[in-house]
Image 1 (tube, rainbow, N blue to C red):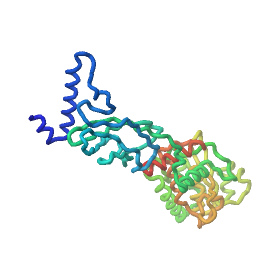
Image 2: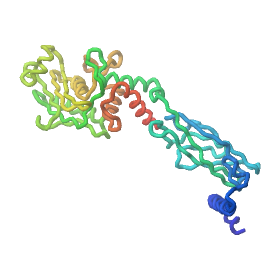
Image 3: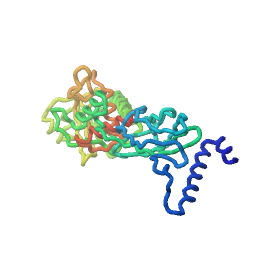
Image 4: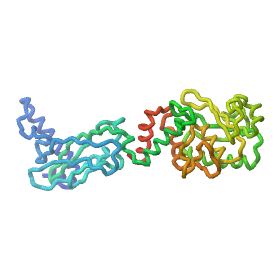
Length: 354
C-alpha cells in the first residue's frame, strides 16, 4: 500500500517502479524456461499494461524544415481512457502530447549523408500505466540543389560562373581556386595618399566579407613581406618590372590587369597592374586575384567583375555572398563543376537551419 501511494504522487517514479516490478515477474516465471503469458506476444505491449502500440516505422526527407509533419503514433488502451504522449528530448523529434502527431523539431538536423536513421522513444500514459516504445525514423535522400528556391539556385549557378571563369572571353577552370593563407599586399609605384586611402577603403569592404574567416587581405610595408604585388604606373614602367606581363598584353591600353600563380587549388601569389585610380578598377583586379572570373551581370545591375567597368559598377550583394562561400573555412576549395551544386546547396540549407 505504501508503494502505490508513492506511485500516485510521482508519475515518473511510477514508471521506473513498474518496469522494475515487471522484471521481477519475468525472473520469477523463468524456472521452466518458457513464458506462457499471451501479453508477451503483443507488439509494443507490456505484460502488465493495457496500452498497446501499433507496429510503425516513419520516414522524412532530409533537410525538411522545422514543423514538417512526420506521421502519427498510433496506440490504444483497454481501459478506454484517453492517451497522452511524451517523447525523449534528445531525439529532436517533437510530438503532440494529445494526438501523437510527430514533427521535425527546431534542433533536428536531417542530413542523409551523415545519418540515415535515428531512433526515438515515445511514452504513452493512460492515467494509470506508462509504456515506452522505440521507433525508427528513416531519412530519405534528396538532391540538395532541388530543395533550393529559384533565387538560391541562381546564386549557385552564378557561383559556378564566377569561380570557374565561365565567361566566353576567359579560359575555363577545372576547379575553384582560393588563397589558403592571408593575402599580404604591397603597394608600389606612384601611388598618392588619396589613392592609397581609396585602396584601404576598398580593402575594408572586402575584409567585411571575410569576417569570421581565417582569410583576409592586409597591406604590408615591403615587397619581401608580400605575396601580392600591386604596381601603379605606365605601360613602359610596368615593362621594366614585369616584362612577361607587358608581352602578354601586346601593347593593349587597359586600366588594370591581374595575374596569379597557383598549385592545385591554392593561389600562391598575385600581381596587379593599375593605370587608373578608380576604386572599381582596383576592386575588379583584386577580384581576379581572389579567384573570380568575369561576370555576366552587366545589364541593369552592374557587377564589379564585368569585363569593362566604371564607377557605376559595384560589388553586388550576391557577389559578397559568393566570396563568403569561396572563402568559407567549412567549404573545401578545389571544387569541380559536379561538386559545386551539392556542396553549395548544402551550405545554403544549413544557413536556413535545414
